[in-house]
Length: 386
Ligand code: GLA
Image 1: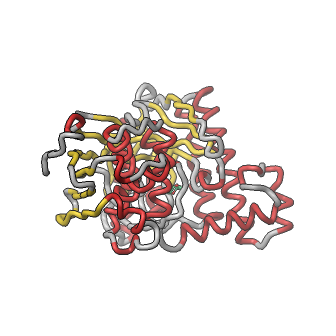
Image 2: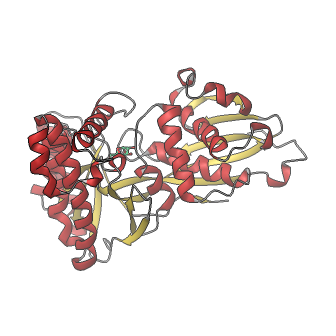
């Protein structure tokens, strides 16, 4: 890594920042419908070492790609969004955050120092655990500090979402960035995606003797292509037919009328989102009243809704969920955007080995590649480490 040479900027030289991946406990494809989500940050993180440089350029490099990408800060505006394809995909995340952060704060490229950013990450990529939000979050907190921008966490989450939407080209919502930036140990982030009000809510898994198992199917997915955008379009169509700004504005009682007005596919997409919003609210209320052992049925119902109504599951995810449940999991569901990635299962600590073995056996029997199964702990959000 190069060392800072500018007398102007060397006072705020180097440091290390990091941000975590996330698991979504419940609330899938509700974020871009202005609805509710309940994710938590996990202990797998992306770290970035930052050094300032005097030449107004930004260079990003990472342990997972030997080739650094370098561009003048002043050229970011030319690059995004129109010429984003010229940048290797992973580098669009940090460069996109730098671009979106300057735009959001109306700062000129000349008013901030150039930077070298060196990333390393242990967040599994393509597993539905938001390796992308971890890069965005780490970049956002690092640049916010070093560039002295004074943005709060919600503003940084919006910057991350803009980077993902416009610099990467994935039409995703704001859940992942909020989870990565706001996470707290042993807690989930209950988020209203319309107001962006977040309530950090105790999960109580450890005191109840529970573990949260992640079953990474290793079926990879990308939200910049295909199904994710189609689902989003169907939701917008459904809201327009019902004459509401977003599906958040519908309740379960509106579903019979929706069914009369829409084609079957659009209706089932709408029914997933409307019932999923309700399941998030029910999960938070149940957790508070009765503890985490009582939420299993809601996790199961969420999976069924994604499998049958939203149609974003794949056979590997269904197998993972069914095998985990049959082996004694309290509840299980796919997590994240779907079409691959991971399932989660809430499991008695004493049953982790049994559930793991049962899922592995079910995958082998079905002829699927071996899954990667591990536990996660609700962990702290983005921070400065050194
Ligand atoms: C991806 C997106 C999120 C959210 C989920 C589905 O993770 O990045 O914004 O839409 O899918 O809940």
